Length: 308
Ligand code: 3HC
Image: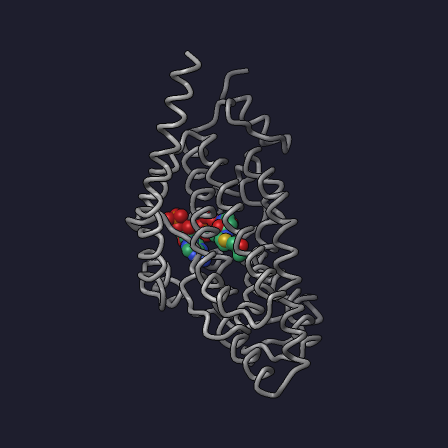
C-alpha cells in the first residue's frame, strides 16, 4: 500500500497518525491550525485569571489560582510541542498569533471584573473545555490526542476548584451571592460560543470529522455542555441567563436560546472587549523574553560545539 492508502487505512481503523507517517498536506495544515490555536488559547487564557493572583482573598485561593494559571502555561507548552512534530516553528506560530494571522479562543477576550469571575471561569470555561477536549483525547493525530490526556486531567482540577470557590461564595453574604450571579450572567453565553459557530456555519467540521480529528460537531458538544451545566447551576443556586432554557423530555436534552453569532464573529475578528489588551500583553512578554531564548540558544550551540 502507498502512503495515501496507509493513511486512509489508519483513519478507517481508528488508529493514530504519527509524526513520521505520510499524511495529506491538508491534514498537516489543519492539524497545525487547530493545535496552534489551541496552544495560543491556553497561553492567552493565563491573562484573565492571572490578573487576580495578586488580589486573591486568601493565601489558599492565591495558591490554587497560581497552580491553575501555571497549568495553562504547561498546556500551551505541550500543544506547541505537538505542533512542532508537524514541522511548525514555535517562534513563527507566536508571530502569527501576535500579528493576528492565527486565532485563539474568543472566551479570553472578556474582562474578569470580580473574584467570582475566577470561580465562574473554572466552572463554565474549564467545564466547556472538558466537554470539548475529552473527545480530542481520541483525535487521530497521536501527539495531539496524547497531550489531551494530561490536559484533561488538569482541566478537571480547574473545573472543581472553580465550582468549590463558587459554592463557598454562595454560602457567603448577599453581596458575594450577587457577585457570583453577575459573573454567571456575563460568562454563560461566551462559554457557549467557545464551541464554535453552529454546524451549518462551520467550514472545517466536515473534513475534521472525516479525518477523525474532531469526534463530535460544535453543536453536539455545546448541547452536552448545556445538559451538564444546568443541574450544576441549580445545585449552586444561580440562574442561567437564558429564558428559553427548558428540559425537553422528548429530546432528552435542554432546549436553549441562540447565542449571538454576530458577537462571536466580532470577537473572533478582534473586536471583543479585551482583544487588543491580550495581544499587547502577549507581544510585550514575547519581546521581554527574547533575551532568555537567545541565551538558551547560545548555550545550546556552545554545548553542541563542545560536544562536536
Ligand atoms: N474562538 C475563536 N475562533 C473560533 C472559535 C472560538 N470560540 N470557534 C471557532 N473559531 C474559528 C475556527 O478556528 C475557524 O477559523 P480558522 O479556520 O481560521 O481556524 C472558524 O472559526 C470556523 O470554525 P470551525 O467550527 O469551522 O473550526 P473548527 O472545526 O476548528 O472548530 C473549535 C473550532 C471547536 C474551537 C476547534 O478548533 C477545537 O476544538 N479546537 C481545540 C480546542 C480549543 O482550541 N479550545 C479553545 C479553548 S482553550 C481552553 O479551553 C483552555 C482551557 O484551559 C480553558
